Length: 627
Image (cartoon, rainbow, N blue to C red):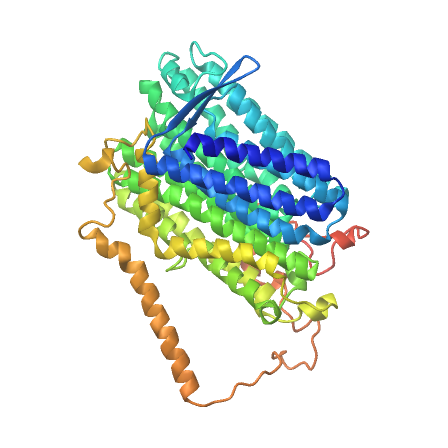
């Protein structure tokens, strides 16, 4: 089966899934089952396509004809890499959705399984069409309208109507900016390939090229969530959609925006020649990325709704990627081989964030499924009753915080260390690296709060007056699947870095080609993996893992050899006999001084309303507004 055949089979599977949901109607069990099987099959074909493209080392170029309209299609190494990410996340979210929607009302289930395959098909299109015209428009509208409906059906209309509409408006604004930008290329014809657009930019002049890039930065920036555009729609959309949909929104939809930025600034802009100033645009991306990562992360700390916390955190993590893309341009302009290393960090973090943020949203879905609340103030002590979910939440929180021996540590190390090392040529890179490193501590604080309030304090059962238990296996297996990939990204980073290098070697027109070592043309990021001294660095994470396992085994042996018996005792309640509002942790008491100091960053309104509280006009007293 060739890569082209796999593409058609994946789209056919998605079409069959849509038709099955339409024809089966109210037979929701069959709708869920057939939808899960067919979408999973589509994910298999997408993954196969990515493997075939990367393995063969040859991109696939097609030209589709629809009603007399020509649509260029290009599946190269970069597309294949992001298609692999899409296949993994779509599979995990679809498997999770099967169990999550088991108790959802019939009409919502049918609607979701009508829109979900269309949404995935739109994402496939955005990663494979090679124009800014009819093909891009078709893929974008499939993505935008279907995801609008998925967000709209995530919660009751009173809560979901406005966030869904705001999302759709901004997606359509982004589409206008992106498609309209191409008309600034001299001699442009609607439907020209991206390579042709780049060539025509060379005759358009520096002013037209600058406006072209501004429009594309705003368009793809809206989708990616850069500051201040992301704050306008991401918190509402991500926290309103049901968790399996939010996992796709944060995991892959915003990564198609990153994909677009890479295509424009590292491929298309190259054709503009003297009209493209990499030094200027590198500085713009560095400043925008630094503001995005800092403000988004600080705003996340202020949230009591854990789904909004995850949404704001997504903005912050995207900031790291945009910062690294800008740093890579600056390093390339100065002739530094660090450009490729920083770029590899940006792509690696895109893959990492897709995995652990999707895992976090699915964890949030498990919390919502088990407790019925999205308010951290009403949770606590869940590790005792939801141990598997708690362990997976700990892994994802540890990873996104960028702690040592985690996937986030590897990608952030590549980006931040690259910034510092390249700082001798640019003070801006050094300052941005300092802010990024400082913000990493805020990310850790954010997830200490998330995990601590939900899992390690006490009182969820008392506060909610209901029995809480671990979610069923259908909700655990998809999370374990993503967690396994997350661990592989942490302990096998050389494999993923080599995969990134392979994807770029299979992609023509990469801007950074020709910088640094001679092997760059075959390995565009300039890193030799599994060769010479680098072999030790490649196996170091595995050696660390082996050492940790030995130490864990030794600790367990020492504990058992003492013969001491374990005893379960109630949590200490600060001298009180029973749980009450005076002896449980509340969000308002965590990092309160930090929240006040950074009040100027916004997102201070902190009222949480669960779906069963629609009659309440305001939140409970303890939620309040940060003062």
